[in-house]
Length: 54
Image 1 (spheres, rainbow, N blue to C red):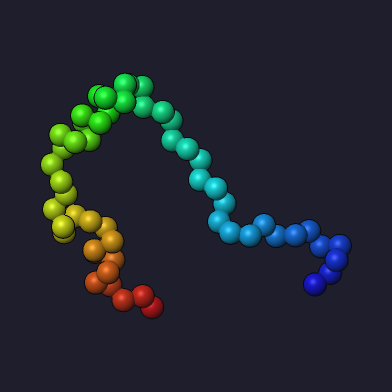
Image 2: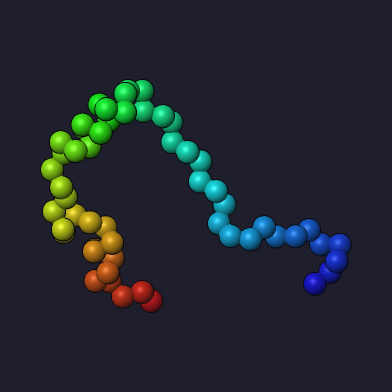
């Protein structure tokens, strides 16, 4: 490795934060808690679990 070469940063780049929700935290919590839970077949990690990586 050449000592004059620029250093690479390690790890993944940081993700940007989403815009804040323009509502009170009580209303956000009520909306989250009042939605029905997902059906197990809707979870993405369960769909990917059945697939084998190449």
